[in-house]
Image (cartoon, rainbow, N blue to C red):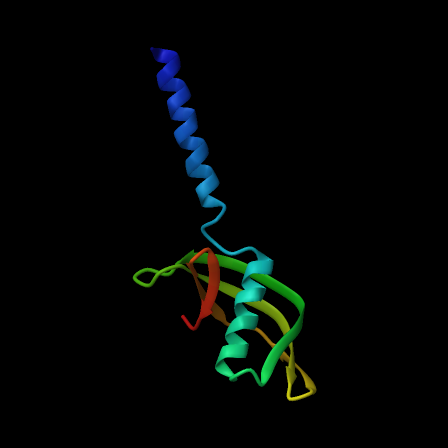
Length: 107
């Protein structure tokens, strides 16, 4: 009986730890969410073509809103109507997960 309780406790802990890994977006997921947001806000006239020194750090719970707020750093490379622009990213962004995909929002 003790073995079953110990095995059950380890199983619960393992599931809890695996859930922690998905509580914030990966770097690639964050970049994809930001790219989608730029395209939506600009009506498709602005697309993200790359990132330079992109850093995702300091993620914390966004309560009372859904998701997490993460500090971003680096630069985003944009294509605006055929012209390439490089803009710094130095602001926090709120990320939430819907239907298995991360989305970016202003905090």
